[in-house]
Image 1: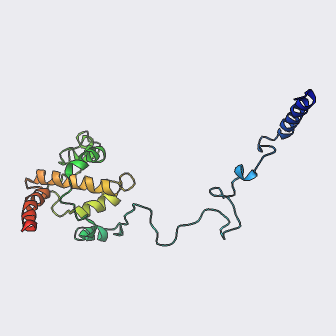
Image 2: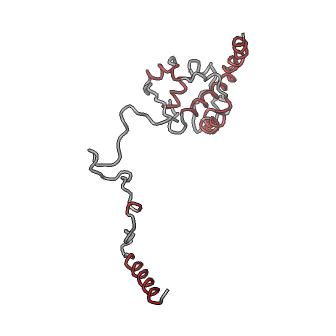
Image 3: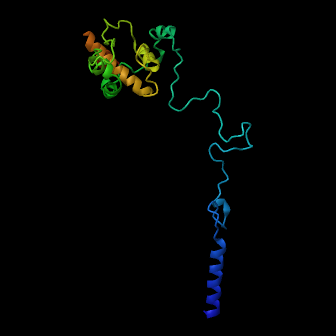
Length: 210
């Protein structure tokens, strides 16, 4: 390759490099295949003339709910709480057969400081007189509560107890309530509801085999 050709290539490359430079830091200068640098899609919350509200963001279609969300339509009123005691439609079908141990850690995080590790109402805050009047779970102190009414209280709070709906999800709420029901049985000196399910299971297997 002659010296002239090499010099020509070098000068051409230098010229391309210099002309592609740009003092404007907001642009890449001269580009090849611009669509690879500039996305034609809209950025989140960008303004646009495509929609009536002038924004890229759109509201969800009416009637849609987030994935994994479980609506709870019982109102946060005295009437709603009374209704929750007899309305078991919100209780999972497998509530009795759930493993209480799955809710123990969650209970100790969110509940034990007031209700006590045994569910007797003697949590550390009660013992230190930071809060008073926390009932135990036994059926003499809380004779008319149900799993559904417990869920209502978790969702909305009651008395000095605030709502825990934003802190624990749907599955975690029921794990805690199932553990509470085991503590309630222990405090009341009665069998846990899970024991009856376990006792019935072998009979169901025999019936299926027959």
